[in-house]
Length: 227
Image (cartoon, rainbow, N blue to C red):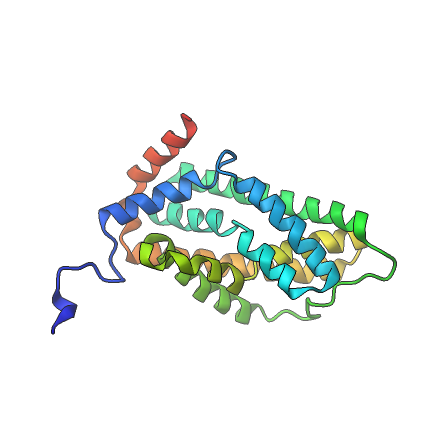
């Protein structure tokens, strides 16, 4: 009757095992051997033609495949736990991901582009507040789904709800087609999403008790480095 007072962990609590498993998955899936960069490359090769063809279905397919949530959630985790090495590693993964995505998209656009081909799904003006709010809500869902196994099936939906990869691809498209406005607006959209997700991830990981998980994160990092 009074289920609120039972001993089962609530949604706002994470057991030690849940925290350990979540850290292990985040660290292990952001590596070259895990296929992270391969998935990112394939997703970019799918999303970029989708943008050029204005094909929403293709774009969504690439968004589901893209693993960009991993470094963002890793950044949030490192900020909560205070693990400097983890933060630096996550930032490196994010920077490499950005370079891979933009350069691949630019090269592919150069190969596929025809005269007069433009991308018109990015608006002339970006309301960053709206996109940060959407990304924040998506980031909350992603962080909870990452820790709580019963919500893990929601991660794919979150990947679609928040627009991470398409703006980066659009920056590459704008670079190849020499469209500075497209590059600017797409960059703003990506940064808005990045800020929203990192803020949400920080809040959720803090609520779920990851503030004392710096040692576990360090162990996970050492395990990956020793492979």
